[in-house]
Length: 133
Image (tube, rainbow, N blue to C red; front, side, top):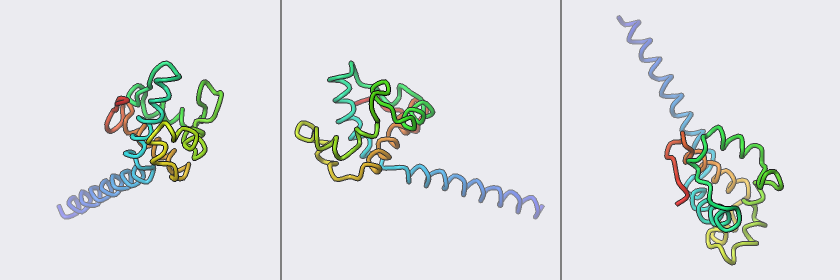
């Protein structure tokens, strides 16, 4: 009986460790709240005005968004997706977009990871499927 309790305890600690590691890995990816604000105020505004409509994170799965973000192709491959998280892009739209102005000094890679975190969290199969609003 002691051996069974010991094995069960070790198994429980392993599962707890795996769970905490998964939470840390997700949290290290970016600030999903900042990503949400940027996506909703910059990406959605632009898509609504110029691309025929907004694209909600819950329209795709986490795997779909991961593939899209890793491919780094925007506008049917015409340009880099990362361009839209760059300081240069934010500077170009900050006069008409308060979120771009608010996050003007956030490092490019950090903001891109924030957006990624929101998109994955808000994906169809994410923790909190999200619309554009």
